[in-house]
Length: 282
Length: 251
Image 1: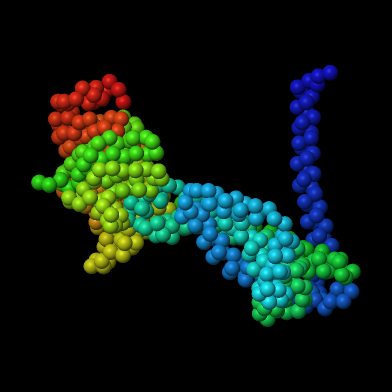
Image 2: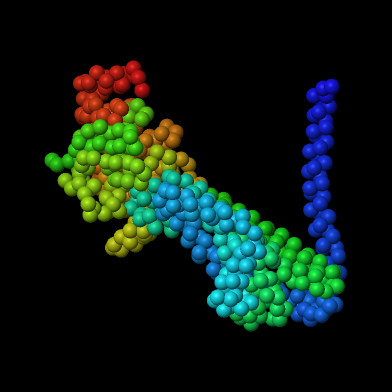
């Protein structure tokens, strides 16, 4: 039996509609559940007291927030110069040969390696060999390795998208390759590079696996990046697995969700503003 | 008088493609030289050999000489930056940087760190005046260059070239993206500029070549078929192929 085209159309529409609605609904349920269960915790100085540990999970997340900020700052300080530098090399300088192709393929492969593998590498090299022990710097170095492929790829793509006429105009005015790159290509690629950087910040905030084995789980207030620490995502894990304060884990999760939401908003706003300033609309 | 620029037995290859074949041509100082011919005839490739813009094309090869004031710009040890400073280029599509009008004009002088006898502000104003753009945009110097009309953008690109004080200006179909008003302004500007500069223009438009240029060269399939004073070439072409082209039998 053949179904009539009208009927197949209806079935297809119904299926696609249901799939779309459920995808959105699942996300909404997660966010609403986490926020609704976590929210009541916020009354009691949750953000401004240190976690006290113990099976009941007393205290707040102040030192965890500070650790997270330290971690992200340190990671970006390592990641941005390294990643953007490599992207400039690949986009502008690397000769078009097999070696470059291998490098580019390697970068792509690295992007697919699970983060815990990076964590093991970080543990072996940064924690043990470089003797940094469990510390924010060891965690940041590991995160930088993990995120390097992403920053390289987004920055390289942004630079490749800069139109050739801009490059030719700069060269024809007597610019050296570096002058062209610095004063024409990089500014024009900046919205794309910033988007890539901030998405990496989001990735760093969300990461947990590779940090267990490099940054440790100290809940104390860090005073330098040689101290151990606990990022928000790691804290969620500890609360959920080692205490019975599930509500606090959910509250920390809510902070994470809000943070990632804000980071995404900032990204969009910054990229939009840079772009419209270049186009002369602002 | 010695030519300002001169090519001798110039051949250019892109991979296995022989784009320019034994081109010998002399560009006279303070004159406008037009290069005409159908698409793909090599006229743009030829233009781009005059300031070594083809250097950036991979797998390309050049034989022969390109002389600027008698010196081969392809000799070893010649600084390509210096060549491009002396031989500026205006492109087919207006290509101002996504920066302010002021920044666009100041780009070259800033980058080349040119002598500071005069301030950057003065260089910018002088260049914009020379490009006949100053009166239209003098209150908008801080605005984005992308706000300008196509014709204004092209004059801005000319101002940007003038700011580095070149001797020769190469123009690659500078009006092909412009409307008739914009085209007219550029053509008038060229007559002004030839008093101080030497101009080589590639154009698709034979009327334009006849209107603006003093000398014309006709390219076909990578060969310079005929090169003569513009009046001569258009009224008494010596080569049959030139005649066919300018009378519109092909192209």
